[in-house]
View 1 (tube, rainbow, N blue to C red):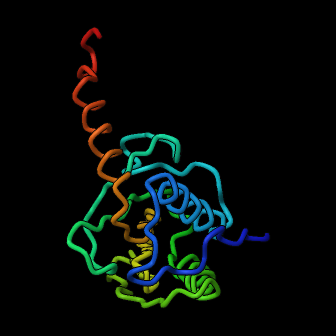
View 2: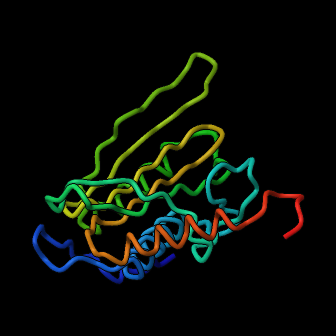
Length: 181
């Protein structure tokens, strides 16, 4: 299976023009989609916890907006979210090896941070893949589940604050589940 190349693989360095919220949303969706494609299984992915039963949909824009420091400003933020899937097999090593090879081929620095097997046979592997611009991919694969964590690069563009403010106002206007509009 051929995995598509990222639309924007070249990292930006501190002091360069910062990406808009639209560019970050596109980058985050692309990073997530290519990571999913690299697993070889593009079906049945969920955003967030599988128990929430929310299918992966980048258009939902359900992302976190954590601060980051790679652009040298206290006002820098990046988009972050996790997608999950049932384990592909009981041994998580093959999927960890697959994503390690893929992310390294895309210029990421990849480190395996956890590799454990319990006496019961349960296994878990975690890797992280980073770029100098703050883009981060993480994988936690266990005998039960696969989770891919994706963070866009950092940006200080003013459109991020506008988007966050509008998003919070939309959320405040949405009635709780089960209550009329």
